[in-house]
Image 1 (spheres, one colour):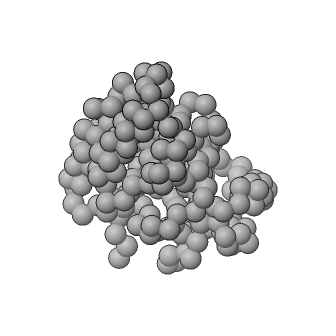
Image 2 (image 1 turned 90 degrees about the vertical axis):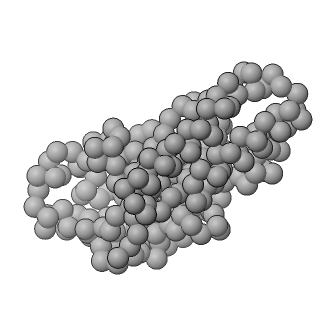
Length: 226
């Protein structure tokens, strides 16, 4: 049985107080912030958001295996403690999170599924909330399965693109958090356009805001800030 994983995506804005610091201090403060926040989960990855969007500068992707019912609470406490000490400089603006679970539409694990504990990250990360219409859930499982078969078939035509699905029913405003990793943004955009032409698209209520981010190990991120 697959182990449940908590996936958490936190978006941050660098404040005017941060940019007012001398370059060396900016680097030191950013490094200290990352040292604390990266210890909140088993795995944490840092991404650059701006200039793909203006409301956030950085994204932290955290992944934590859910070993017990108290695992989420412990992660949230560690994460909050790490963030609170730097709020005047690095301000949280949005979080998207949820849990993994086996798909009811596909048997077994897809070779395109993201492994959040694998350290080899792709250059681009795309994250967005996703909500289906009520009509989708009122259809029979067989009807939904037929449309999802088409959706899955299109996705398999783009094997270089990896995906991850988090379930957030009753936990946040969205039902899912959809995550992709890619090496080529043009190819990823082609995939999304192809998926727009599938029958299941009729039952999408909301799939915005879309965040496109660039993977930045610490030293690369510090070079942007210094």
